[in-house]
Length: 496
Image (tube, rainbow, N blue to C red; front, side, top):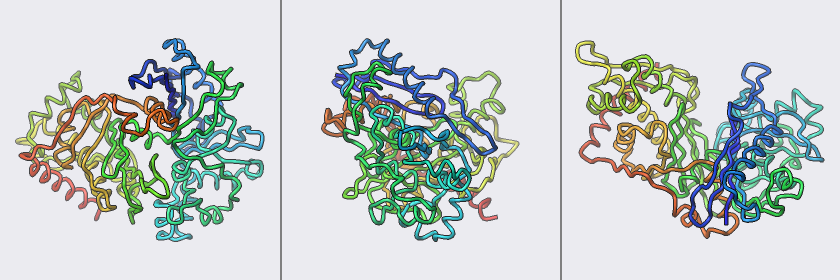
C-alpha cells in the first residue's frame, strides 16, 4: 500500500511515493530540472501558467512510477502541498482565464494598504489576524480593476493546490486553511470574510466549496488517470500550503511547537492554540492544517529574508578563499559565545516584515581592530541569524505561544552545530532534526485524510529523527547576554 505526494513549488513540481506501512519514500522526482519560468511583464509582477504546473506534475509522476515500479492501483491516497497566496481564475467550464498571479507578485500591495486603512487596523487584525496585505484577495482586486473583462468571466477563484486538485478530480473546492492564507477567512465569526469581500467588490459565489484539509476531496477521473498513469478513483485526501505542510512534514501540530527552515531566507512557523494577532502585523497568521472552528490551531509565520544569504556572503567575502561550509563552522567555533562583542544584523536582503517592512540593511557592530579576526565575524553572522529568529519567537510568545520544541529538516544552516546550539541556547527550546521534505509530508497527510493512519502520531511514527539538541544550562546566560546586546543594537537603529 502506497501514498503519493505532490509539492507544487514556483521553481519545480516534486512527486514522492511513500510506502504507507514503513513510512519510507520509495521514489522522488521533480521537474523541470532547471528553474521553472516566472513571467514578469512589469517590475514587481510574477506569474506562472497553471497548465505548466500540470505538465511538470505529469513528468514527475511518470518518473516516480517508472523508478519505483509501484502498481498504480496500490496507491491509496494522494496529497498536495503548494506555493501559497497564488491566484488562479477559472470559468464555468474549468478553463484558466489568465496566468496565475503567484506569491512573490507585489501588485496587490497598494490595495491591501488601502483596505487596511479604510476598514480599520483593529477590525482587519481581529477578524483576519493579518493586514489584507499582498495576498490572494488583493491580487483578485487588481484583476477586477485592471482586467474587468477577465473578472466578469470568473466563476471561481482557486489557490495553486486547488487547481491541481481540480485537474485530478474535476471537483472545484478549497479548504479553510487555504482561504485564510488568501485573506478570505474571518476567524472572529468562523466564516468567509464577508466584510472584506464586500469592500473589495466580490460576490460570495466566487469562493469554491470548502472541504476539510484531511478528507476525501475527490477521486482521480478517468481522463486524469489516463494522462498520469494513475488508477481511476484514487482519492485526493489532503492539501495545504507549503509552510503549513512543511510543519506537518516535521510532525508539528500542537501549541508551542515550531517548524523552522534556514535556507537563503529563514522561516519560523509556530503553532498557537488561541486566536490572537500581533498588533504591529510583524508576522502572518493562518489556519494550520488541523485548525477547526472547534479546535484552534493557528500557524504563525515569521520570515527573515537575510538568513543563509548572509552566511554565503561571509563565505565569499570574509572567510579564507576556497573554505568549505564545515570548515567555516570550525573557524566560527574558535570564537567564544557572543563573538567577543561583535554583532551582525542580518537584514540585508530587502524589507523585513518582522521590522514592519523597514529596509535597514545589514550592519556589523562592535569590531575592535586589535582583537577581532575572521572567526569573530563568521560566528557573529551565524549568531545574528539565530538572534533574528529569536526576535520573531518573542513576538510569538507575546501572542500566547509557549515555545518548547523546534523541529527542522537536517539541511542548510541547520547542518551547522554552532547554529543549532545557539538557537537552542538563546530560545531554551529543544531542537529535533529530521530527514523529510514537503512531498513526503503531503503523502503522509493524504494517509491521515484517507484514514490509513488514525492520527499524525501514527503517520509520523517512522519519521527519521537524526539528532536532538538540548539547551546547555551552563551556556544559557552567555547566549542571552549576546542576544541582549544584539537586540539593543537593532533597536537603536529602529528608533532613529
